[in-house]
Length: 304
Ligand code: GLN
Image (cartoon, rainbow, N blue to C red; front, side):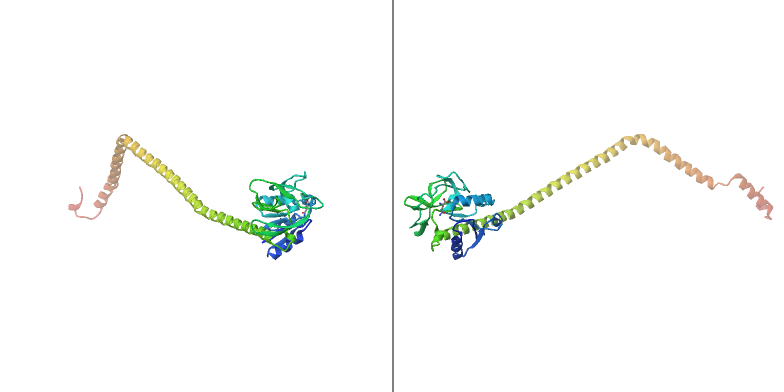
């Protein structure tokens, strides 16, 4: 699991140390390019919210960070980080990421006496050490915001879906309760994402039979189309044949009397011709008689 830690200003090194203690990787985010690496969560450390907000803008990091948060990436803002995430800041006209439905009061404990240490319950997990340094607190929460810690009647820790904020600095004490809570959020989000992916994949798989069904349906449509074309061609052919036969039948009485006499006449002519071939001409017969007369045959055999 890799958590991007905004390292523009403030107490980022302490966050990195807590993450390492819990076995998570920390990726330092100093430029817009750093935001392009694969990250599972984000930490916005304590420091000076106006300075960090300005640097985020100047380095073109504000919008990409905003987009990551809005797309569900778990984010943990401590102190100035809380102010970066707050939709409203009571005593400041500036807004930064403004992704969480909370109203915060900046330097809410006063500038001089604003730093103190206390122990209080966090997310029902028992008391944990809390260090406040010129800290804000939350004056109002919107829908879907869960209050996780209250000190002297003031909200000092809250969560809204993938966004966690504390007005105190949990990274400054040895206690890792809050970081462990955040890493649990990250791991839940990673699990939800992988479930989403497998659901999408299985939905993709279930699309396969649907696709096959569409292909089969298309095939049957084409087959039916081809069959109907073939049937219509066949019908036309049958019609044409039957029309031809019909017209032949109609014309037969007209044709027959003309054809039959011709067949009969030509047959007669052929027969006549063949008769002529085997019939010797008169001159040939005379020649034969002359030949017989000049030969020495007995008179009884001679023609008269
Ligand atoms: N007072 C600072 C601000 O307004 C926050 C202080 C802190 O992060 N410890 O940004």
